[in-house]
Image 1: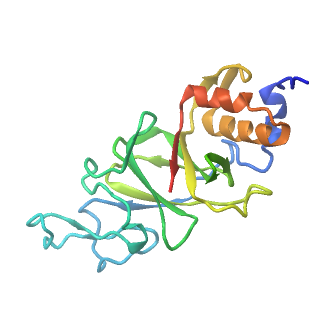
Image 2: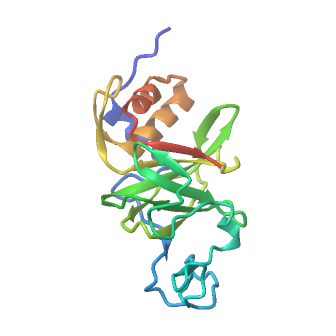
Image 3: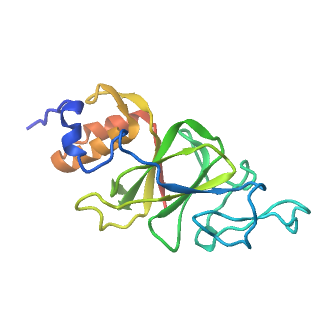
Amino acid sequence: MKILPLTFLSILMILTSCDSQRSTRKSRYDYSPFSSSTSTTGGNQTDGEIIIDNTGNGSGGGGTTVTIPPEIDHCSWAPDGLNGFMSNSAHIGSYTVCKSTSNELDLYIQVKNPITNVQVCLIPTSASGGQSVYIGEPRCLVLNDNKRVYKVTMVKNRPNYSQLPLNSVMIMKDEVHFYPYPFNQNALSPDAYVFCSQYLAQYGYGGYCDAFKSVGAYTYKEF
């Protein structure tokens, strides 16, 4: 029996009632400057900030030495905002996203090209056997400085999925795109992704997720 896709707007609120829509999404993050204007406090991490050693004793001969907290020193960062990024994406450009080794819910992100016109949302996901599912609501922020590493504390609160490990993440701009059939309308990318995932889980119909993927307005990263 063929499942007839329902109107996106008519069931969005039902399927995503446990997730934050644009009107209620909050930017919950700390940020960490990679700039020499930040005061030095002995190289310790406080309030999610990466503290800068600006004493001039670094290998650059008077340049700034960046002290990376041990929980994210397994990842590659770009203190100058230009060189050292781990990944590249057509959606957000060169970037590094890293999971803390001391707290599963703490993710850190830095981008080469500042994104100032819209927020960027991170959605915690769990991957297994080549498949992934989202396990918590989006956390969104403005990535307006390429010399800053932003710390985002994720939340695992999707019913029946929150017990899964956070081992991957979906990253997307909180902006509107036209999504083809069965959407056939404009939708915010995070809302379209959450909707398609909920619909797939509830009805076993993957057409909405195929439409979401076809637009390509997202980046996916496994840890």
